[in-house]
Structures are given as structure tokens and as C-alpha cells.
Length: 97
Image 1 (cartoon, rainbow, N blue to C red):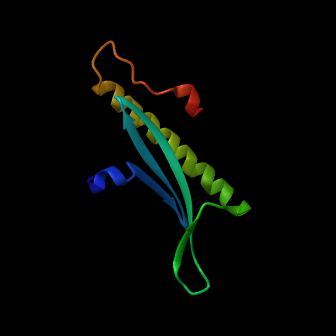
Image 2: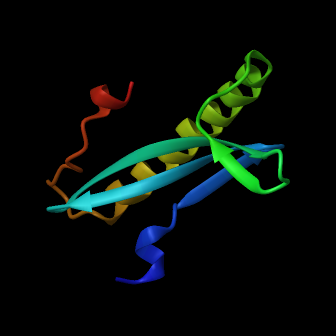
């Protein structure tokens, strides 16, 4: 398995917050998922990540979510332009809303 398959297609950051966009393709169907993470240092100074957030993080998370939503739209349009005429993309847009 190559490293490329284990990397997000896009990452956005805002300070100690980040969102990674992941592409999952199976049977000619592509779906996108996102993963939000917060970086911090533990009491020993070691870098750590968490998936819990403070109230003060919410606005920045919403901005990262908007960036991710827009980028996934671009990726889907690119996927559709690569497809042969008459085929559907296979992703369920309603599921992502």
C-alpha cells in the first residue's frame, strides 16, 4: 500500500485546529469524509491531538467546515468531469447534507 492512499486529499488549518478531507473510492464510487482535530501539548510537553473542542473553537471549526464543504464540491465536480457521459458518480449527495 502506498503512502498516498493513507494521506488526506486536503488539509486546512486554523491555529491549533485542523480538518482533513479523506477520499474513499470503492467499486467506482467516491465518497468524501472529514476529520477534525485539535492539537495541544500534554503536561510533559509532548504534542497530542484530540477530537474534543472548547466553546471558543466553534467559530473557527465552522469556518474550517465551510472550507471543507467548498473543497469537496470542487473535488466532486472534478470527479464528474472525468466520468464517461451517461454515468453517475455513485455518491449520495443527500447523505452529505
